[in-house]
Image 1 (cartoon, rainbow, N blue to C red):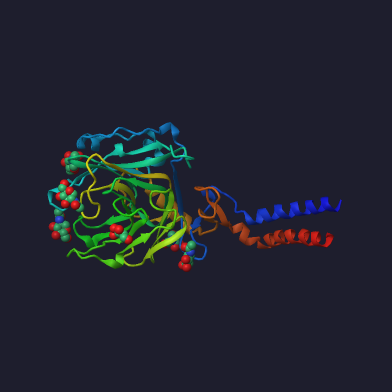
Image 2 (tube, rainbow, N blue to C red):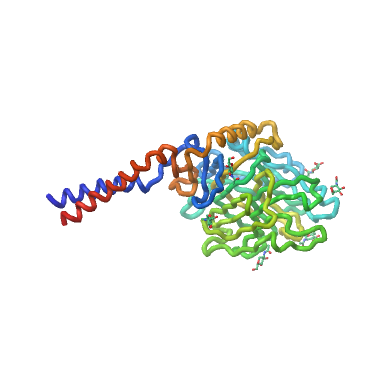
Length: 386
Ligand SMILES: *[C@@H]1O[C@H](CO)[C@@H](O)[C@H](O)[C@H]1NC(C)=O
Ligand SMILES: *[C@@H]1O[C@H](CO)[C@@H](O)[C@H](O)[C@H]1NC(C)=O
Ligand SMILES: *[C@@H]1O[C@H](CO)[C@@H](O)[C@H](O)[C@H]1NC(C)=O
Ligand SMILES: *[C@@H]1O[C@H](CO)[C@@H](O)[C@H](O)[C@H]1NC(C)=O
Ligand SMILES: *[C@@H]1O[C@H](CO)[C@@H](O)[C@H](O)[C@H]1NC(C)=O
Ligand SMILES: *[C@@H]1O[C@H](CO)[C@@H](O)[C@H](O)[C@H]1NC(C)=O
């Protein structure tokens, strides 16, 4: 008899405790802003999530295209990349570096190809997803076939961007996730603002490079304060699936691997609205090195998640972009104030935010207090019963 009521009391107690401890998963419509660190005041107005983990209907590894012109002109590799969810945000690139080759700055022609960005089946042993997105770079005799997608909006103004990704393949390639802005014509180093995560496939597998560009000056001298050569946490070398995170704030850029802070650079932190870019490439230069003819390297991504602010100044490259609407919406939300505060870190479900604090909960804190009392009363009673 006493045992039963004890169990019941504990059960009620645990249920209430559960409700107090678990944060509610909500849709983005419920969130006015997102905090990435509860002890910091940097918050962001918008959240986006790109999930490549369950796209079996689009999975297909396209045959490489040897001709550089055909490679550049190639179509998207699946309808996934034509859907608005992707195409309104990301632009798959087909530009090449022939200008830099002609001027003698780099030795190898790099041609970006839509054919090198595709959804692939995950055939890992005990796969952690059905599919992922692959970015491929291949060395041909005459040129390097590469992969790049850029945000269509150039108006990201501070963000926290994360990807669950890995890199592998032949030495001589670079894979990267970065912010970018260039107010000049590409030749004046000082006009570049850029925060980088770069992996060089010629480097040891536990070394990752983080930089607030430029990393060298016009005279060719390194700027050591701008860059960090970081050793990855154990078990998180760049061939392993890891969450690579970059937080760009007005104060500094900070990088994390699987939640561990690995570098932070305040020097030359980008100031102005920027693009977000992902790529896999080589140009035979000092930084990337050369890939052996016929070899390949890859960056594979299961998902990309961002919380960010964006300015209303319509610095976009494409009329398809809905940046204007998005920006106005942001301004409106900012005016409403940060009523419901959400987190993308404290959620049990990647991509779905949880409510940290709602305007309603702040007003009824005493109700929450009562809830906690509810846990302790039965526990206290239970103690007396024993
Ligand atoms: C949160 O921000 C505080 C203050 O800026 C900082 O000291 C701390 O390292 C941050 N925590 C994380 C997990 O980033
Ligand atoms: C993002 O925008 C909101 C609303 O304008 C602002 O209060 C907040 O400080 C901004 N966050 C950063 C990191 O600048
Ligand atoms: C490289 O770009 C230039 C300039 O846009 C263009 O004329 C040329 O055809 C491109 N080459 C290839 C291989 O796509
Ligand atoms: C680019 O800018 C630099 C420095 O402002 C200038 O010297 C150079 O002539 C420009 N090049 C082109 C192609 O406009
Ligand atoms: C980082 O340091 C390692 C040695 O610890 C070196 O092998 C690697 O080339 C360095 N990477 C860069 C980009 O300097
Ligand atoms: C890459 O190979 C080219 C010749 O194709 C050469 O000019 C260049 O110096 C090489 N790059 C490096 C970093 O060795």
